[in-house]
Amino acid sequence: MKRFDDHGKKLNYDIDCPTSFSFGHDFLTSELARKERQGYEVSHDQSESNEWKKASSKRSHIYELYAMIVHQGNFSAKGHYYAVVKHKTIANVWLKFDDECVTMIKE
Image 1 (cartoon, rainbow, N blue to C red):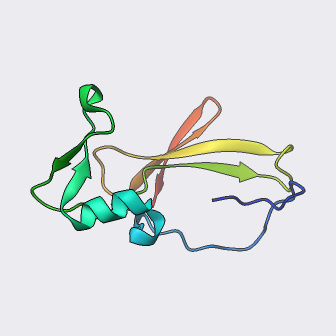
Image 2 (image 1 turned 30 degrees about the horizontal axis):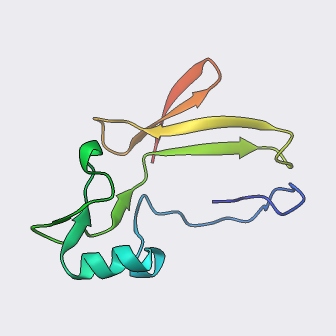
């Protein structure tokens, strides 16, 4: 999500960001939406790039958030950035990577 205006000033209002979300068919290309409605999915096999194959079930388009870049400061060109990454095996735990310091934080 873009959190800065066109001049690089930070937008300082709270947003609700779910950790699980979906992009509906409105966000798909018309070809992909049409193919998925027919039960096809795009192949992820490198040898079959841009090929379609019949899927046993349609994709759900549900995504799980697993990482974020966070900015501290008032302008995009100034301030401090750090990363927050979901722990792979511990539920509801995220790791905050802030320069050389790594800390565990709750969701």
